[in-house]
Length: 165
Image (cartoon, rainbow, N blue to C red; front, side):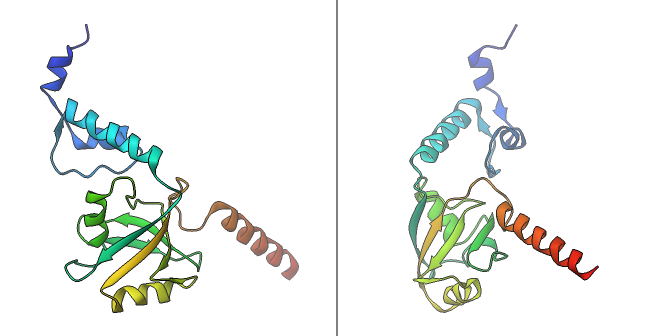
């Protein structure tokens, strides 16, 4: 016989279990009771449905301990978000803006109007105290270089290697 809803609600769901059940990384702040975990999941589903393909975020770097992002610029044009840290300007933004939450797999397209050059974009972050980021939501990929680009590059390398023989 399955446990009653009341019995389940009285038990905490470990954050490790929540991570296995979730598509997104769950921050292990404190284990939530079953009902509270369900509410968080419902909020995330609603924000996923409302999340625009591209959005702008404004960050005040005067009080922040860095951006709070781990990025990769392997495509040579954007900043691929490999990780969102616990502290920084972006995690602070995320707490206030679920619909425009910056997530792993998203890409920063421009910073303060600077685009197409990831190193220059990061340079803007070091110089400016007010940042405006244009973010494009990810396609669910966890790799910095899109599969189509990687396949094209791999095919070009294979063709070049064949010519050398």
